[in-house]
Length: 469
Ligand code: AMP
Ligand code: ZN
Image (cartoon, rainbow, N blue to C red; front, side, top):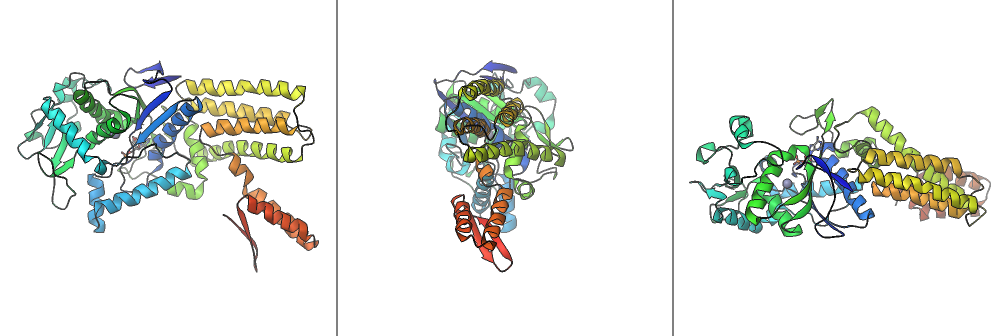
């Protein structure tokens, strides 16, 4: 399995620290609003990385934080006249709902910054002791950037270029800093803000320190994969490396993975530009599975432009898989032969080629676009070779292979196949016809069958209504 490592700018063979196990950290969202579909890209992409690793037999310890203390959260809390915690808890709950809808697995641990302050105080204390950090007159603690000789290794930036170059990258409060490149680890509280006691001042942590601390606590000092969107490479991940490696004296993460942006009209979708769609909005128009399919239709390191055309294409692509699975189910229900004959066995052997293609694509830095093409080839193969003459074993094996590959991508094709709206409506029509013909036994049978698939029927004056249980 090869992974493109931002650190070395090369695809490298994946070798875990501990055989059979993966320790993975993905920077999560700041929770002050509903997440937009740009935020959903890393969630879907790295969830798929995790699923593929699990499919390969790895045990994955997957940690993803929620940043629940931040200027934007505090601003919103003041606007609404509530505690910051009310805002962060509300949007964590909403974010989890969106994740579930997109079939993103919950992380092994979802730590919250506000629950990890002790660990932050410890790490900041160690950095001060080791001479990598210092306390300014007002109690602000800064990281002494030049004390970490490898600073810039991830973003491939040179310290002197940074110093002379982009002033906007420098953090405020420069007058107190020894060097404009130094960044904040701990800052004094302002009126009305949440704060914690510390040896330096009552205050709150800078943003970067939380990930260094949570990664260490839940995964250990050295981890396999650290991931996030490409905007996090600098300064966030560069600063995380400096803090962790200066404090622990060990390599922080072996592989650094970054997804490219989700754009709209070729500009990054972001809250600050105001050019965003929330996951919630998009899922009112499309099935969340279509959104997931759309995200995986491009390689994660390629920019992806959100458009109605591409969403339609994603919808059609997903429908092709869902229809094939539903067709295999239908044929299996009516199949006469149980066991596969020699010809079918040979065909199943041939179909393994598509599983190999799928794995090859995923092994090549998680090329989900090519992996989905392999699923399409398998679907085409199934459509060509399955017929009313096929055995249940043959049909079942094809269906299982398609569903399994789709599941590695987090795409639910089976459940949907059982519950397609059009299928439900067709059965309801059949039931109405049976009732008209006074065939109540058949009508009841259909009602029970729908119920077993989680569909509840209601006979109302306006006709039959249905809902999912
Ligand atoms: P934030 O809440 O801004 O810290 O973002 C949470 C995650 O979403 C980070 O990994 C960001 O890099 C990522 N992200 C934000 N906007 C986009 C976008 N337009 N495309 C891809 N990833 C994004
Ligand atoms: Zn982070």
